[in-house]
Image 1: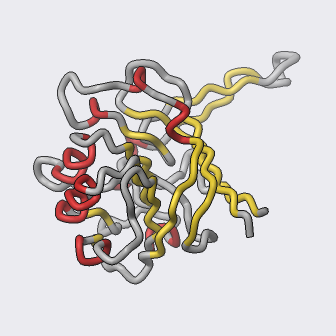
Image 2: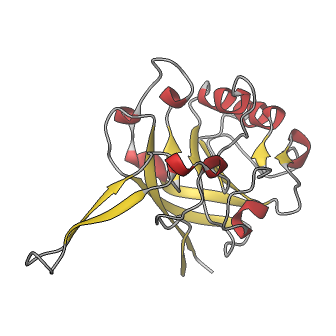
Length: 207
């Protein structure tokens, strides 16, 4: 058995979407041993920081929020597919011959996992690929970019998946993970009524 922590580590210089300074977490000491007999730290960050789970409200007005989180959906088997040869976008052609079945939870490993800084041309899921996944009625999809799409007008990838209630995990780190079947334990911070929740994701291989 081998355990892989595929969660992004949160720190002040973590890669953030479009390198926006306003999205970087602020971690500050609010009490230390110079003036107290204890130590405490505050953190201020966007709920889409690092590895996180999107909810419908992120792209749909009055959409479902994190209050609908069902932890049972994220302790299960997941299929990891190696798409490291893909350049810029995952298309229907990249997916059509893969063993993806109804109710599967799939992770796509791309060149994103090998980059520690944000790349404006990160690999994303194109609309036709998202529609194909939706047509298969998969359970969820995980990507190693900070988005399943890259500012596509109208957010067609998010919407194609969300319309079929397909869960979206973004910001995975899959560099050390080989293609195959794993047991996934993905736990989100239970923050109520928001559009995303930071997640800790662990994969276990029986090899």
